[in-house]
Image (cartoon, rainbow, N blue to C red):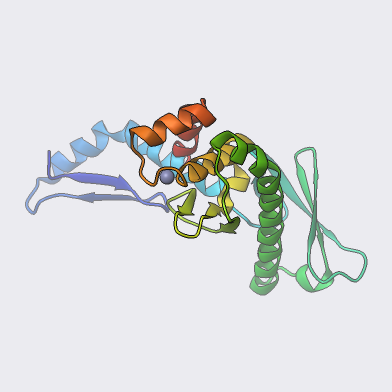
Length: 220
Ligand SMILES: [Zn+2]
């Protein structure tokens, strides 16, 4: 049993490795016994993928601050060459200039790139709003913030330059997730490791951090 390794890949397929000559019937039993776990893991992968999707197509879902919006593409009036976006009760109205309206791959890629830029600006705006109160709570100031599409982590803090980097995907989750990550990275200016002292700092500046962390971890 110890040498059988079962995992769900990012694309939802399942990988199982077993020692040579393991009877197929035994492997089948393992898969059957773990079917609930497999279903839950595949569900998590699917939810995560859709939550972080940045596809600008009619009907596609884009998550902004923890809420789903359905894309509605409309031809844009005026001379702007890039897409503009407008949120209205569950709908993300995408004003698309002529050059980007096509169904071809290139037009789709340009819309996606415009959507990413818009999401980045939304996140940057919120970061600047939250930063003073977070810095006040943590009693530390960073040199600046930047946003990157990261994988496997929500943010990072360079303790030499005092720069905080935030994952663009934070824009898809509830605003408290961003606040928590920002406080977490600022706390690294006092304490680089995730040790007892670090957790005590987090307790002070963001008492609810455990539940927000669990929420974010359930989505990655
Ligand atoms: Zn950390």
